[in-house]
Length: 413
Image 1: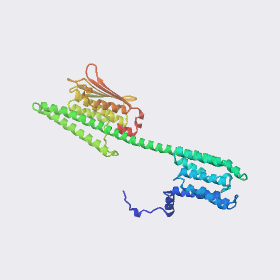
Image 2 (image 1 turned 60 degrees about the vertical axis):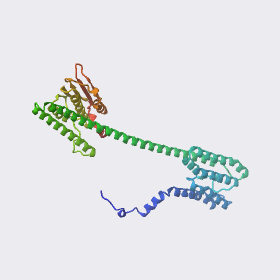
Image 3 (image 1 turned 135 degrees about the vertical axis):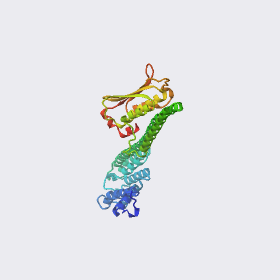
Image 4 (image 1 turned 180 degrees about the vertical axis):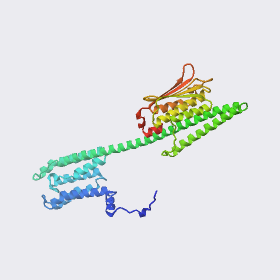
């Protein structure tokens, strides 16, 4: 990263800086002033220049200013501005002062004020203000016609008030909808982040459980063997200690890989996730540790997604760990079937001399295996075998589209 002294960075051109100031904090006030001046220039100045009937230029100027100036503060006091402009238009009609070239002093002033009130205040207040404006200008219409029959009058201000309120209320509703949508999106983003963190913690706890549980179970079994034969069969005790050393080193290696993956998930040079090809080596280590286990594979192996490979390995590892814990001395069979639409992993044992069902231990092994399978859309069954023993069978979807799993889903597995 290159650090740059802020003083060395060239600022924007003068025109750009001026435009930023105009469209920044001063933009609303600038727009309001421009609207007020524009209304006066477009509708009152032509009367003063002779474009309309200017029998009372001083009165026309005064009413033109009174009808335009309140627009400067329309954002700060929107309802008050509507009422003030209503009074101005009613007074002009009753006084027979034309400060615009059109009938009934038609112009956008009152419509702009009503629009602002509907946009910036609650519906009750804005509707009340618009109703007062429309009713007052309409009620003054017959009086003005009676007082000044030579001057044409119409209900243009009532129409302007209705149109301005409808437009302003629509804008306020759309802005409220956008704000609510943004709040919902922010809330969903926070919930997704929390869910991702929870799933990541679950994934890590599952990985650590699988690694540590398997290795410590093997170490415990071999330590017991070494203790029993240490005096009478030192050679076998040495083999058991060697198995303990191998299991502990393997566990440490896997934990190091897992922690390295957590620290640097982009480290593609580190093979942190075991695959099906690592399963024969796991079984060889268990055989050397004294477990009577056989391995059989049927069907045509194919390239599976990382999630399927890792889950298949972990399920087989956890099932073998349960055999070591609960059925010491049992004959065990691991079968992998590469089917057309699914990968099947089955681990069966004959119960051993003194079996204890895994479900009776209250551990997390079977539940964790079932969660792994369900996460990929597969199933896992576990239960006793008629005649003695226990079987764990997992079926994972292995269609060609399995590689299309999202990286996020694969990470969670």
